[in-house]
Length: 171
Image 1: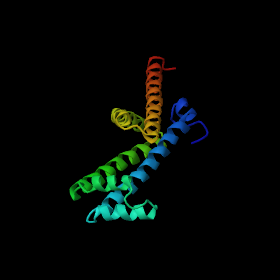
Image 2 (image 1 turned 120 degrees about the vertical axis):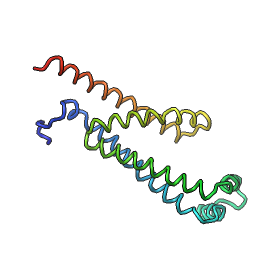
Image 3 (image 1 turned 90 degrees about the vertical axis):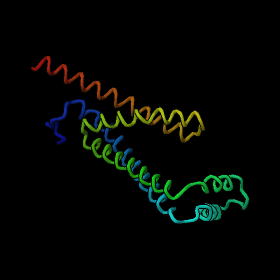
């Protein structure tokens, strides 16, 4: 309800828009991961080199382009099994983000905790990858995830303190 008579504490109504925005972000990530998984599954039983060459022609890369040649060389070592594993890992992350996103859109406290745990667990990997091969995209993604983490930790701690205070002063 919007009239203020909901069972959510006042701060949940006051800054719920931010949690819902994070939920929308998680749903968008879900859609991207599903698209990536479909793309990976579509590579199974295909000559990956031919697929990369077709994309290079579509985007007008010159034949013999070093970037394309390096990509083909790297992808030629990828096995069908690795593609299956990558596709299912992408789908598993998509399911996790979908659950988080729906929970956050519904302002569920468990979803905030789930997001704190999963986002916090991925930040060290993002830091490692960003330091290893920095790109603006990696830096941006890491900063967004760090901001989400800081906000949700602050929010969850504030909510816990308010519950403790309400339990000690039940008037």
